[in-house]
Image (cartoon, rainbow, N blue to C red; front, side, top):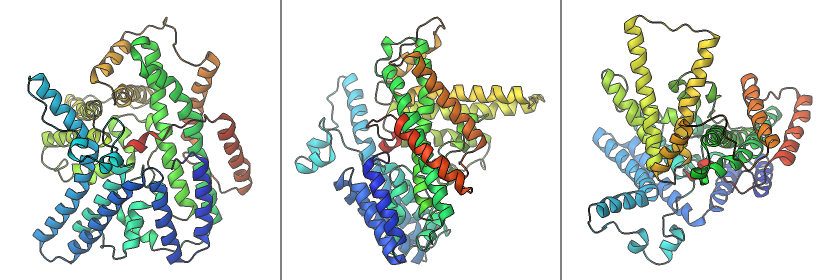
Length: 489
């Protein structure tokens, strides 16, 4: 179910009103059942996969906690992780591995040996799980709820979280509808106790949640879905567009993906807040970052912190020497690229961010050794922000071009490098519409510079601003069937 649909508006109102009219038992049952319905709207059969991993992780957590031997604890954790990663890897990477292996074999004049999924599992099962072209369908939000489930068993294993005995509450931890399909990726320490709580109706929280949802819809419908018209036109046929057009389209994509994903996060956080739940912030004005490391402290925070806690630190972090630290940083970004999808473009996207991070560390080390200190003032800070944004924007070329050959991404970069200001902009919009897009981006940056979240304590201001934002969404929003970008992950 898409957040920006009439179906969700009705769903949200009905579920929220029912939620506040029920006892604690009724509330968790309601949220679990409605979360199942929310997920099944996309593809009903895939809830069986989700249910299977919930059962495995629920019992794994209890057995890990009960076990007295460390070896047995570790074995149970490994079983849990393999079941989660195995399902994720199968659905997300089977076709990618099949295509890559068979391409290599064909280039070596060998017979392709990796069969298509429909040849392994023929019949109705294959029809349920594949597209018309025979490619595996990816269960929506699989990467998100898989990582959230893994964080639970890891935290139980580490002794930081008691195993959840209430099966319904644990299932709700994985399936809570606001953050089920695109995060934020939560930790059990932050959520499980909230599901055991009985939140009274709080008008201040309702105002705060509704306002965050309203501006999340604004970012998605008014900004992201408007920018996508320019981005798609350029990227669907980049060979016929000049370098200046591709530069503008790529910059617009940087803001499209930000407004799309952070807009989803705002809606999810706001919907949960209305009912009394507190989800972690996922974005904090990432495009004002002065370095790549700062960018990743502000962009998709729940994923960045997940990789830090469950991959970077277990690999050794920065505890095993300088070069091991660089290796670990690079591995984390490579895995992050693969987490986003089965494409060499995603791998390169992650590798570039890893290279940026390591290069920045080496630069800082050299400057310190040479005794050079870069002054920090408004000019250097502005230059750092612009340079960081440029580096990030270059990587978005690969991210946006995920379903095309890598060669197309390099072709786009080559055309961008050879741009000329004398080239005409080749867009489906006229000049007035283009300037309106620019004004929307400027408005967003100014708003988030002063107010990351719109204040709602003044009830009169709330009742003025909230309907105005809704009206803006209705009259200025682009009506389309564009799903949120991160639903595909």
